[in-house]
Image 1 (cartoon, rainbow, N blue to C red):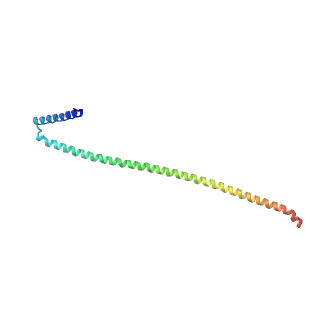
Image 2 (cartoon, rainbow, N blue to C red; image 1 turned 30 degrees about the vertical axis):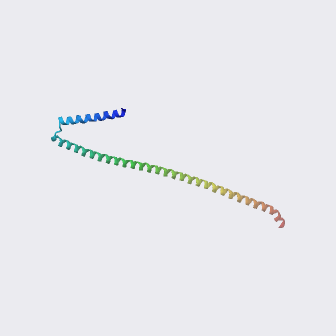
Image 3 (cartoon, helix red, strand yellow; image 1 turned 120 degrees about the vertical axis):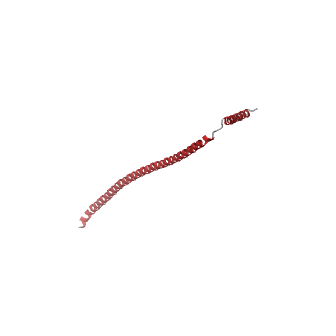
Length: 139
């Protein structure tokens, strides 16, 4: 005989024993009918209590879920505000750098213009200086 068959036979044997024990116990001492009503009332009261507790637990769970969602929203909002502030600071920094570079470029343009003017005035002076001896001869 296989081991699993022996085990299943033992289990069924134990079940039969328990059944017969319960049957003999019920036969020897049957349940009283007058106590049955009070016990059923108790059980229905327990059922009502547990249903109420179940409803309360579900309500608490919903509240906790709502609080969790609100906390997530608050964290996401704070993160978005922080990122926006960082972007604004970077944009201000870029604008300041652009203004500084613009001032440098304007200064360079002015220097180039001044050099061109100085060069053209020197060239004019040189031309005038070169022409002035010839002009004196003409006059």
